[in-house]
Image (tube, rainbow, N blue to C red; front, side, top):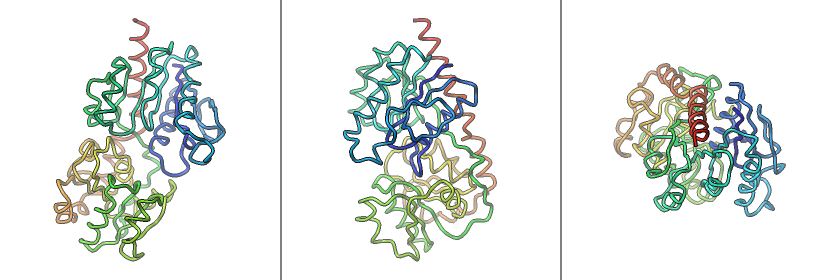
Length: 342
């Protein structure tokens, strides 16, 4: 197949540190190339890919304050692919913020499929229903439920390069929180849990205003330790050394990539039952899913008792990149066949 894969143009593909959308875009692109497909990645010029690279901009707007408004940069990157639509069998848009690709749904000579990477509000979905025929791929059943009424042509869970995550059977004695510093991610709840169980907690994420205002006052360098934003190698080391990953999520996340990554290192997770958590965590096998914070505090020791080797094996079986690529290829073929039939 000839595939146009449209990445966000905020930063490089893959990202220098964190960035789940950019990471998934990179893994899927290179996985499709490895399968023998002819892929053109529409991304920033400083991106690294096995596909053909079409770069409208040399770098992303996260790194250049003069690149404003960011929405226009995203739109023009998308338009560059649609303008070449006749060269492709399928156009796949990775919607980091919202599916602006819908505006091209009835203009493109080639079918456009969009993957959304957040949990949409009812108001957003109501707006997107102006294009009820436009195909979406959901990243979980939880997200598919929120996209009710839209044309969901498949549900594909994220994948990771499981071989890149080093299994560690004997961890160190700390808990880990890894994720953006926001109310929805539950970092303050993670701090409360660590303090109540009397364990060291490492916080790994980029510093932002929320960190400085809400989180930093709790960081004492002894029990609550701020690591900073971790690159891939550091992230793998942090995962492997943790007794457990704390995921007291407050928002209804549509996936939870850190869960799969931690489990690939053999590290079990302690998560609240929100969003797609039960689709990612095998309760009692790769972690424990709790109803509330009190239950998590009281039963955290049960998470430490889980077999780390089994955690690793289950993550490898469920979250490999090959499975994700295969499922997207199936979606593309289905859309191409329907397009030809019309």
